[in-house]
Amino acid sequence: KSKLAIAIDGPAAAGKSTVAKIVAKKLQYIYIDTGAMYRAITHKAIINDIDLDNGEELYQLLKKTTIDLQQGAKEQKVFLDSTDVTEDIRNQMVTNKVSVVAQHGLVRKEMVKRQRELSKKRGVVMDGRDIGSHVIPDAEVKIFLIASVKERAERRHKENTKKGYPSDLKQLENEIERRDQLDTEREISPLVKASDAIEIDTTSLSIQEVSEKILEIVKRKG
Ligand code: C5P
Image (cartoon, rainbow, N blue to C red; front, side, top):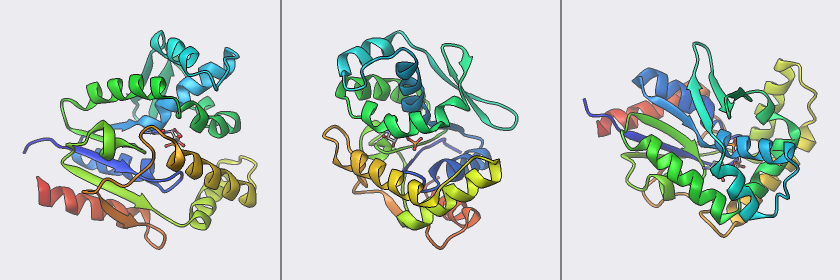
């Protein structure tokens, strides 16, 4: 069976990564979390006290930075210049700043170059904001996941609480809305549903149901 590229896009906290991981595992494909790449460079920029509005400086930093996504036995790990930053890139500071870093054309150009390289051989499930519309425009399967802001905030809240992290539902709603706005309104490859993407509203669906829907779509293609 020929290997495909599966693009999964959608707004913040729509369940993209959870579903992408399940689909990748089932198909024995590689899962690529492009959000983690933007998060990793944001984390490094914060540590190095770089002005996050300065696209050129961020680009220079990125050029000398390696970001590795590695599939461990249990979870995917993110390495920034060989340091495991899997946990760090999920912190509040990074989450609130990543969409500012991701606005810069130069940063995106370099990220897209790396992502295209990773998807060249197919057999990948890549999730993000611009995968179907820009990174892999010829992806064999394009999915666009949506859910209401309220639902997304509630899911994230449950996740945080389960992990024992402090969490405030209203604050989560505000953050998700703000990130959606920045991602949708930015000039360079904004969050947009590709014309040939299949939209799935996950608001009233379980993770399992969404994954099955996607696997059905893949089956029809493959
Ligand atoms: O997917 P995740 O929420 O981890 O992504 C973090 C941020 O990275 C997004 O809010 C967006 O600003 C940026 N991003 C992007 N393009 C992608 C993936 C993520 O701009 N393909």
